Image (cartoon, rainbow, N blue to C red; front, side, top):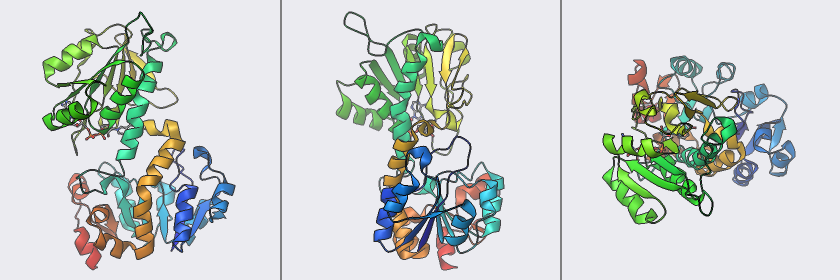
Length: 372
Ligand SMILES: NC(=O)c1ccc[n+]([C@@H]2O[C@H](COP(=O)([O-])OP(=O)(O)OC[C@H]3O[C@@H](n4cnc5c(N)ncnc54)[C@H](O)[C@@H]3O)[C@@H](O)[C@H]2O)c1
């Protein structure tokens, strides 16, 4: 198959859909890969790296889209890219269609077979192509929280790990899933005094089994959350209720109970945030202050570490990408119900129920699409 990897054009997106190692594997499987010139630069991969891996370099995006049977990207296709998609072509990327009627309409009009990273599942009921980005954002959260706590950034001037003779900072992580666990591990590794709050007893049992002695955990009742937040130097928001906006767990009034200059890192901001005072920010202007509390609410945190994020995403997408290229999308989806769960559009039909329900559009099952 001819696989195409265009340069990402969404503002501030530096990741790339395929690493040179992914290209090498695809070529070893007998496929040809067309990479747009400069596509990997933001993640530190040169055209020469791709050429050495066996890719051909295309001078522009038009030729990548025109000449490829499958397009592999990171972000949802932008309007100009959507015009280049066509029936018979496979698009493999993050889509997030439910809140995006315009993109959904364009993909349906194009006829493209679109497989969304975020709806591919795994045996454990997880989302294997979302998890790497949660791991990145989780590990980044204490790092940006530590920076936000610095005096010059408006923080209270507290070092996460303390020093001999000075107590470490108190870090509270609300939500102990993928983001929260990675955030807690890194904060503890930096020497902070860390507690994770969650409402899932099974998750708390797991955290207790695996991380006893590294960080503490507690049930996230309203009272326990309020007490922990009032004592914290840094609060990391990491909750998720699948398919719903993040619950607001800390009100504006509660900020008055916090230490002046304390910091909030609301990783859940991409789902609306779990603090009443959270609003999405960018890497250019990541922090703001409300009632003396510093807020960091960047909605695409993994973009700050584009190289690590590209490598992590590439590790997770590669087996699916190879299955799609080796077998064709129909056989690959028929063989793997988890990949089939990623099918969102095919030949002008919406094939993902939740998107249809969110947008009030008709949809058919993925099985019905396979039978077309
Ligand atoms: N900002 C970014 O760049 C970025 C990157 C990756 C993920 N995220 C977001 O981070 C959030 C967490 O993602 P995840 O992958 O860790 O999800 P996850 O499902 O692995 O974990 C979520 C945890 O929240 C817990 N939870 C739910 N309601 C709660 C409540 N009321 N109180 C306490 N805990 C509660 C759940 O029990 C679960 O353990 C999501 O909103 C995700 O979209 C943001």
